[in-house]
Image (cartoon, rainbow, N blue to C red; front, side, top):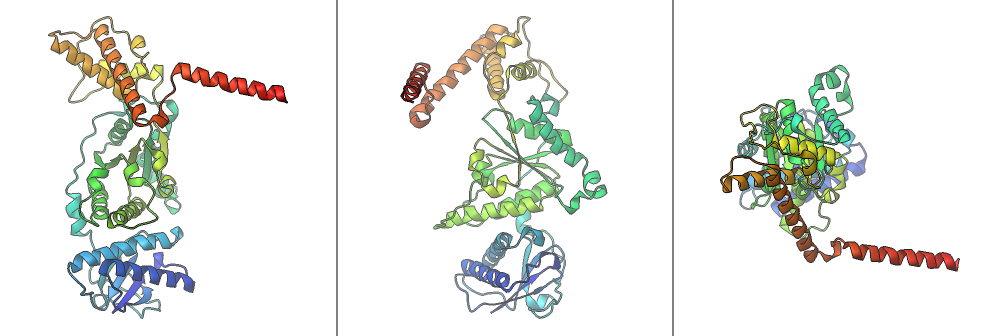
Length: 435
């Protein structure tokens, strides 16, 4: 069986013989993984003129090995796409776009010469990916940018990324930045739970006048082996076709380090999905926002591609503004905040609770519910203070429960901390006396 690996002129690898041998071995390895045998596979190389593709895999005859031939062919194609992404240098221009066809369907020169190749028709997005893309629908963002309360340095970094998309024509066409950089924006928001990562993503979408396409690892993961990378590609296709901001929540599950000792099919599927994500990010011409509480779990390959911005816990002044935004009518929209408030509301006192935005939202909700339950019509300061005290107690109880489960990270009690500090001071004083 013969296979010609045909590179477009823009993605052709280096000319050294060792590079070709490495690529030949990688292609054969992918073939064995897909079909379970090398079937005396003979591999040659050449060039192709294939619009929309970096590499064309041209068989003299499709392998007829076992069941599900189309699934095996797709697995082989996707495997080669990922392996070449790892092997070819970034400057080669390779972007992971690989096609499989029959040799008779194209016109090309001999494998070792610089010939040309052309598929029988210009390819379009595959229907398989489109079927996954149809599962995901972008929605109108719920929050406006003016409702976003952030530290000034954080706000500035986010506005810089928005500026890239608002001035793409000027930056990348008139000033020619497209020659050295991609116009896409890959933003990673990290920080404690409740610090406004999801709200920021929606506010960015609103500022850009776009819808938001929200997905999590659970939306990408599939019970069918090998389907995860395809679903991922479908998600990026959906974001492109709907011109939406793609927001991937709980991103640490998807961006964590690839497994080095792969022993099971599920582990291989995880690695394949992460490799596909790298390819999709390189090709995406838009904005992708990731959110995580565990940035330390990210693979280095992802960290270096993303602009990471820490979403910090709000200080007292920011908490006061968040309280105001959650109590008083702000902005315009279909649903306008209209809480009947008493005259005694003290935002300074409420801001004294060390809450994040989510805690403040929950406190407002609890206070309103408590008033309605007792048959009242006005929310007063006491209602809000009671809700805050209740949430504060719940947070402390959760911290104690977490300490029991993870004693290694248990926060020290104040007396115990003082005791250890005194012991350290005494030891240091003793060492100074000896000197």
